[in-house]
Image 1 (cartoon, rainbow, N blue to C red):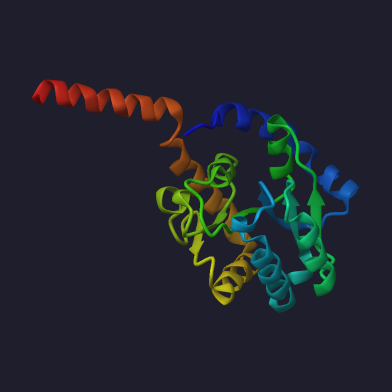
Image 2 (cartoon, one colour):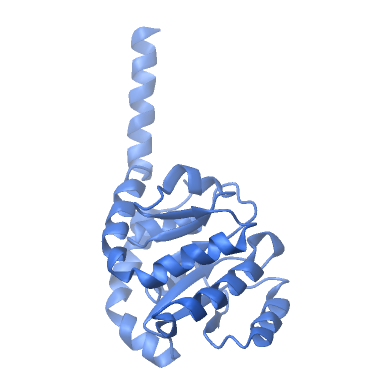
Length: 213
């Protein structure tokens, strides 16, 4: 999978008790969506911003929600201008960081979002599930089909359908009581993809082939 789940989870667990203090220092709202990655066109962040802005205006508890965008890329200035033009004051920008600092950013959020129009896999999904977080993942990402079961640990969506995307964001805004169980479900799924589990499955498969070959 290319991700050391145990190392990431160790950092996340160690830093989680500081969540409330960090959010207060940063002026973050009670609940937040998080995108972590590059700010490039195929990541579809313009639609994420528009859909978030719309969902926030529709949700009963919309004022409790923010959107954290963590990373850098050639689309950043354009995206910041879009946020200004919408008058959306609930988008919070964080510069790119070292890999071992990324889990700290996940402690600030409640739902991880990957809105890409194309992604061979998408490790945002993997990482969030390691931290027992619900996920909202574009169906054009490989991880959506391998790791996301609609309604169980998150949702998949069409990255070219803004109204559908907005409805999924709105669902999360209106159902925070579901997050804990969805996170538990996601952790159970991703544990099956841990390096040790995958290695054991491969060895078992080789043994079966050799026995029956």
